[in-house]
Image (cartoon, rainbow, N blue to C red; front, side, top):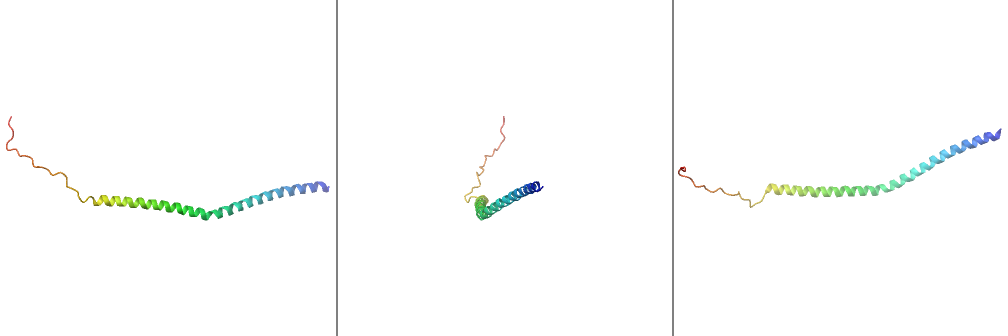
Length: 98
């Protein structure tokens, strides 16, 4: 009688042991992954700020160029002329006869 009871207890112990062991392995892998990512965050943060800085500098340069182009167009050229001056047309004293 003791032998079947011992076999059942051993089987139940193995099932529980496998379940607990696999849960522990998953938790350990998760903790190691967390530590790896935690160590890489400062580098990723520096990289993100570098990218943001680059975009901000490019946007600033483009904005300054656009502002300069608009200001140049608004001021205009100093040597502008009024354009062609209309010439006097000869006046006809009489209407032509046919």
